[in-house]
Length: 157
Image (cartoon, rainbow, N blue to C red; front, side, top):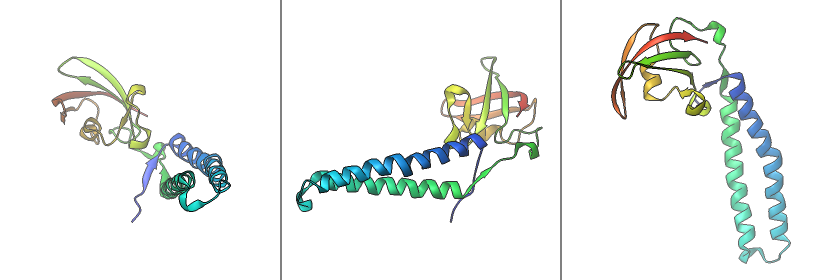
């Protein structure tokens, strides 16, 4: 059974661009590798040919998985989301009550997560603990570093 996953327009566009690159550039490279190895003679003892065919199999599997992912992808229309609660694609400002430091994150799907640029995976312990909460809520979240308390300062999109 295929699971529907939600993406931003940019996230879905990135998946489609990756698929196009694999289907055109990477397939052509592997086809050339197979042709070159085939030209070298006896295929039964040709390690280059075997490696190229193996690479082709891995590439085709990756293409099939990406196609499946894209076919089950949905673009999330954030104009229809409740902006009073923390949801996927919410931009949240939270205060760590122990350190008194504020941080701002955007909650995104796993595939779009990039902690360095402030994009926190929806599957992370902190994001899971914040989902559904409202502004000014204080949340205790079990993290790998222990229980942390955060206050939600601001929610936007």
